[in-house]
Image (cartoon, rainbow, N blue to C red; front, top):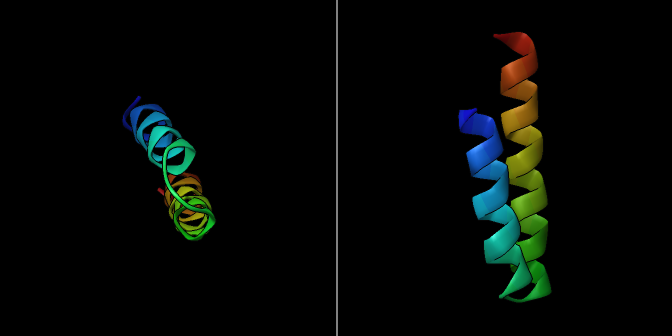
Length: 39
């Protein structure tokens, strides 16, 4: 559930900012997914 909320927040941030932030959002999203997979 936490990861879903995080993903939504990242998506909203990325939507209203520049492509550099979009890349950061993708990176953070990948980290979150990786963390979820290992825990």
